[in-house]
Image (cartoon, rainbow, N blue to C red; front, side, top):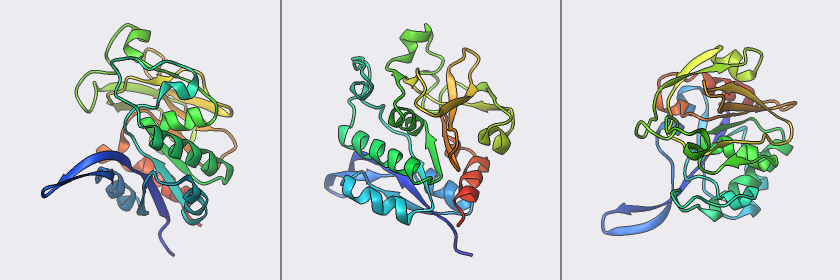
Amino acid sequence: MPRPLIGVTTYLEAARWGTWVREAALSPLAYPRAIEKAGGVPVLVPPLSPQAIESYVSGLDGLVLAGGVELDPSLYGETRDERAEEPQPHRDRFELALARAAVQADLPVLGISRGMHVINVAQGGTLTPWLPAAVGHERHAGGGTAGAPHRIQISVSSKLGKAVGDTLEVGVNHVQAVRRLGTGLLAVAWAEDQIVEAIELQGHSFCVGVQWHPERGEDTRLFEALVEAARP
C-alpha cells in the first residue's frame, strides 16, 4: 500500500549557502522526519501562488501547517504589538487560503503552533495578539526556544485525547493564543491558566491544532494519527 503524501508548509526566510543569501522556503528537518517516522511521505509546500492550492489539496493525502512567525493581527481585526516580530503577509494569505481549501475538501490537517492559529483564523476566529499582557505573566512566552514545560489537560473524547491521552507535558514559546474560536471549532486542551492548547474542527475527518511542537520530541503518536487519517 502506498504511504500517504503529507504536505508541510514552509517558513519564508532569508537563507545563506556559500556566498549566496536568498529568500528561501525552509522547513526544520524535524517535521519531515516525524512524518516519515509515522509512516507518511513528507512533501514541502512553499508559500507561492494561491493558484496552486487546489492542486495541493487534490494531490496530497494530508497536511501539516507548520510553526513560524505570528499571524498579522490585522487579519482578525487587531493591532500588532510593537514587541512582536514583523508578520509575513504572503505566507499568511497563502496558508489561510490553503487551510480553508483543506477544510472544504475534508483533507486531514494538523496545525502546529502558528498552524493552530491559522486554522482558527481561517474559520473566522481571533487571537490574543500579545499573550503576556493579557494573562499577566510570561510563562507561555519564556523558557527559551522550547518554552517552559507545563502539564496540560486534554479532552479524552477528542481525536487528540484518543491519540495521546488525557494529560501531556509540553513546552512552547508563544506570544499569541486563541481568543475566540472559529466556526465549528472546539477547544480540546487547556493549560492551568485556561489558555487553549489544542483545537479540533467538528465533523471533519481530522483537523487538529496544537499549541506545542510535537515534532521536536520522540513521541510520534499525533503524527501517526494524522497519517492514519490520511490513508486512502
